[in-house]
Image 1: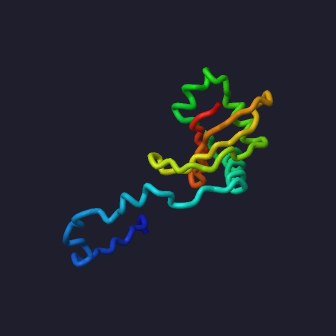
Image 2: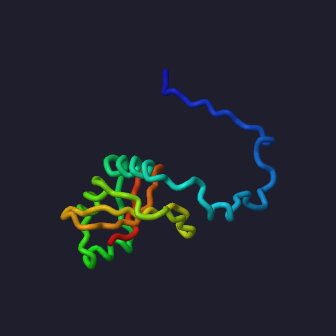
Image 3: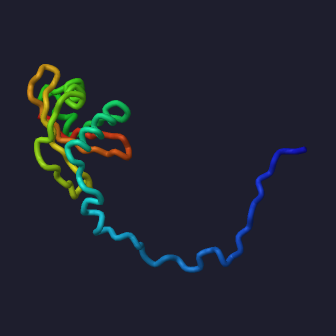
Length: 133
C-alpha cells in the first residue's frame, strides 16, 4: 500500500474562457463615497475598547513625527483610549484614504487634555492615530 494519491479531475476545454475580458467591471467612482455609515459614539466606544485589548494601535507618519514636539507618549494615548473620552466632533469622511476619521477628546496620564484624530478598522482590528494634540 503506497502513499495516497490525489485524484486529478480534468476539465473539458469548454470550461476554459475563450475570450479575454476586454475591460474591468469594477466601478472605480463608487469607491470614493462611504460604503458604510460612520460609527455612533457608543459603537465607536465598543470598537475602540475591543481593539485596545485585542487588536493593534498604530501611528501614522505624521503622528509619529510630532511625538517629541507635542510631548505625547504611547502610554498617554493608551491611557486616554482605555479611559473616559468623548467624540469631539462629527466623523469626517476622508476621500483620499476612503475611511472615517474620528476626533476624540479625553485626558492623558497626567490628567491633561488630549485630543486624538483616529481611524478605526474593525475588520483588521486596528486603530490608526492620525494626529494628536
